[in-house]
Image 1: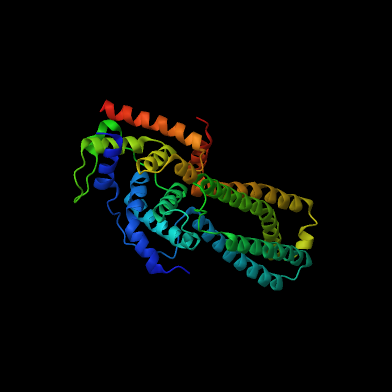
Image 2 (image 1 turned 135 degrees about the vertical axis):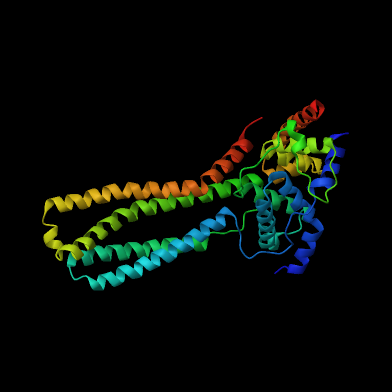
Length: 159
Length: 200
């Protein structure tokens, strides 16, 4: 049985991944809390099966995405591109630039699968790894990614 | 600024900011699969309570036909209890996260739909029996002699009609309850699976 302390340490080191997955797919505070706990629960229960064939961060990314996308979430609010000024900035957050906010909104406007593909890509995962995590073929991943990047670039230029 | 650079800035400024809640491993899941597992536990409990109730009623009624109906109900509820308990034991709340997202989505979708179908089939089987037994017990309590009561053709007809009417009502009520609880979740899962299967 894996030790809880060892697991907690690994989670502490990589918890940014969990936050990122949640921020990209959820915008209800209660859902955020529920999903954070649910990802920890799923990760802890599956941790004994983690054989170290991939990096822990990759494994946790997969756990996070699989959990979020199979979870029953409240309806998601997507702030349209034109309403950038309505975005809430939490106290203590750095005030994001208009460009980064535009990217965030543009990514949130993508469908959930495309969102996953592009975030994994932007986080440095190769197409082969993205295909393995998603279950798509490598070819389909590459085609989708090309189209998504075009869409994002167009949206950002239009700003 | 390039996409990659913007992403890094977005990641550090916004995405990786802590979500409320400490790193504390919960004992219970809030996943829809866990909710189905809980539902099985409740149904197992209810079927056990009904089973005990029918056994008690068996000793309270003297009429053979009512006793026969109750034996039928007891046997049905033993099966109902065993089936629900077995499903409860089988449900694994840990997702197949070692598989790909597509497999995890398909697994969850299939799991929920299979279980809803199981509950609907159980409902179809149990409602006509429950309606007929209820009718016989009511008749016994009211008239004191069910056998005599059943000699009247109209009474048998009413009993059959009651079963025929109550069965679809119960069936569609079960379906509606599951639709309210899991309908949206299933639609979203299906949409994600379809999106993944859509050729570019």
